[in-house]
Image 1 (tube, rainbow, N blue to C red):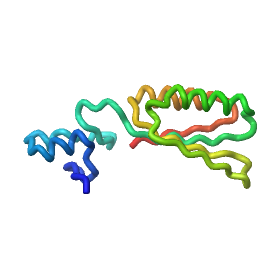
Image 2: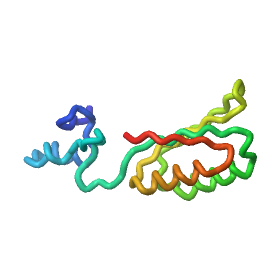
Image 3: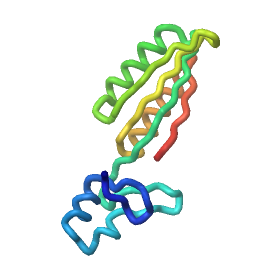
Length: 124
């Protein structure tokens, strides 16, 4: 079972190594900001989920551009899942990312500008 940080969530691998090695700075390694985000000091990446609704109005060119963008950011993508939802004639796509905030914002913004796609981003 992973060690827990001082705010009750699983500690990252960096924080876990501090906890296992008995470092006195272990309780300071994981911090919680005023926005509620939890991160290890010195760790510039964030976890996020990008939810995308793809409607037929965008056509194949939007889908090709979406796939190109996801390929461009593939080194930050933890996983992705696509589901066709026939009753509404749309496809639902979720993309999990571990990336710097500016990369997440850039990808989300580029996807949001594609015709026929709606996007929302959730940060952990």
